[in-house]
Image: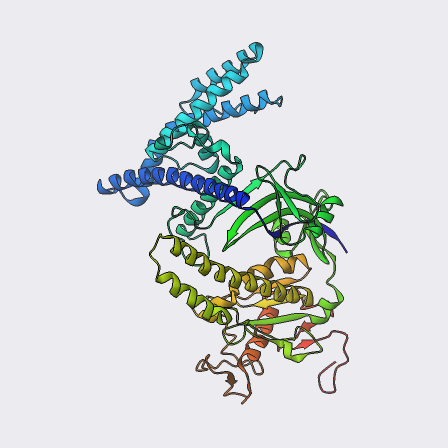
Length: 564
């Protein structure tokens, strides 16, 4: 079985003491503060840009002309920033003992500045003043970028925000400083800056139509006490994040914290050289704190795809699609390994996700038990609804902000967290059975509604788990195009019945008279649509399709009257 490197997260429930719990809250608060700090910088720059655009629009310019005029106004300042930033990077490499960057092509109007900075670097090489010049270059770059941000000519990135924060962090709180920053690990701030950048990029992509799904709103500031989380990193060559035995986790700045569940599985991989810990993300969920340890793991995968470059070098991929995309510029794609015997026996399975059943399968999960073709909804919310309602009524009777209100809120949060953990556990088990039992898993591209049963089932989470688990275990996820008429088409005669009622449990075909269970009919149609969508065959048993979309084996003997 071929082996490849994959990123896997190992989640542990922490068992901190009261003092450790307070420290975790302080770290999460620093990350939240950094997120709000970065978002404020971005918002100010965007507001300055919007004010300039509004002024040009009121002057009679079109939207495109206004944007072009703003870009032209900031061209000279932007070019100066590029020149000084190149100067700073060259000095940074020189101080580190590395070769400097090649000389840059001077932007228009910046030739004199480029030549002057080149001469300064040449003179510094003889007097060893690189460190002094580096400090001056950093200050100049930050000053120029601050000017560009305030004018609305550019929006600060996570790197820009980090550089500006290092200048302002020792200022008093009244001046947006954070003089308490030494009390926490510095990665709390950098992870907050990174998260603000991700939120901003999501909003920008959604605004430009590059993001699928519902449109994202303008990023909002995080409120204290909500979504407490932070991420810590370390140097993998000198690891600080590690397991101490099987029941304690060591993190930078936090020390050794006990965990509820055993870390033996990850510890054995690390000790055996099969895993390298990259980072840890600590999150508060309800009354518990969780640590998600991200590691690069050498994992056996039944099926891999290799992009063979023209020069003979090989790059491995977990799924076929990225390998084919890489081969568009040259080379070829080769398959390594094959699905397991269990997957080949299962072949392609169609999964109809819905409100009556969590999943209706075209083939049962257990071949010996046909009843496993229908997966019932786990009554997670229904079982906890009485307890949740009681906790919410008690919270509504308390004065908001009081001590009793905080305790009641904690009880409501605890019930929700228990439901979330049980739901995740159930979906992990179902997704793994699908990924390890079939070569292809076909599902619809659903547009989820506000139906309570669908929300309680977590169908979006199930799809996410299938996306990475099918790649881990050598199978393939097939997502049908939206609008595929799987619910209104007869799986037997392939005729559509647009007047079919989706709320009815049975499907009646007016053409052939077939009467079947609606979910079974939809699952069969999903299998048929998946066969049409991907070019490979459903499994490695030689199945193909003829012109009538019927499966057939090339080596099978033909029945009388079916041709040669």
